Amino acid sequence: DWQMDSGQIIVQEPSTGKIIAMAIWPTYDPNQYGQEKSVSVFSNPCIQGLFEPGSVFKPVTMAGGLEEKVITPETKFFDKGEVNLGGPSIYNFAKKAWGEQTMVGVLENSINTGMVFVEQTLGKNAFLKYVNKFGFFEKTGIDISGEVYSSNESLKKGYPRDFAVASFGQGIQITSLQLLQAISAIANEGKMQKPYVVEKVISSKGEIKQQEITSPKQVISKDTAIELSAMMVSVVENGGGRRAKVPGYLVAGKTGTAQIPSPRGGYYEDRTIQSFIGFAPANSPKFSILIRLDNPKQSDAASSCAAPVFGK
Image (cartoon, rainbow, N blue to C red):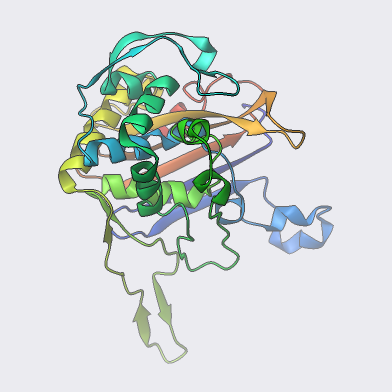
C-alpha cells in the first residue's frame, strides 16, 4: 500500500528475549530459489543490515538523561527550532520551532533540538556510556548466523555536532534487532535479555533440550524504565504515535522518520526509513514490536504509515 522498497517486522517477548516473529519483504519462494536474480534477497536485513534509525532512537538518549538524573519528565526546554554546533545547522522536522516544552513534550512531538539539549546536559562520555549499555557497540548474540554490528568508531571520536545528531538517531549505525533489544529492555523494567529464536531442540530419541535463558543485564533502573515507559505512552496517547493506539490498552511507543545517507555524502532529499517501535500492554508488556518501512513513496512520515501497522 505504501509502495516501499523493503520492510521488516520483528516481535519479541521482552521478559525472555524470545523472538515471536521476524518477517522481511521482499522475500522469495524456498522451492524456487534458483529463479532469484539477486543474492541480496537471501540475507536477513534484521541482523545483517546497518542503518541510521532516526527518532526511534530517542528513548535511548532520554533513558540516559533520566537515569543520570540530569533531567526529569517535567524538565523544561525552550526550542528555537535550530541548534548550531559548527557545520550545517540542526533543525526539527519541517524546521518547526516548538517554544517551551517539557521532556514529555520533546518525545511526544519528536523534537530533535530537545534531544540535543538532553545529550549536551548528559555530556558526551555519559551519552556514549548508555549507547554502550544498551548494546549498540556489539552483537546481540542471537542464535542466527551472519549477525553484523558496527563499533561506531567514527562517532566515538567525533565532534560535538556528531554526538548531537546521534542523540536523535543520525550518524550512528545499528541493526533493527539491536534497536528492538534496547526498547525491550525499557519494557522489561530496565533488564535487557539476549534475543533467541530456537526455544528447544528435540533429538531423534525424543530428548528435549530447552533454551537456557541467560541472566538479564540491568541497563537502567526499574524506576527509570517505568518513568520512560509512561513518557512513551504519552507519545501514543497525545503525540506523534496516536495512530498506534489500541482501544482498551495502554501502548508505549515512538515514531521515527529517518533520512537515508547518500553514497555521495549527505542525505537523500526524497528517501526515508519510516519506523515505529513500542510495546504493550504498557503496564505489563507481553510483546515489543519494531515496524520498519524502507522508502515508502506514499507517506511523508512514520506517524501515518508505520504507526497504524503497529496498532493493527
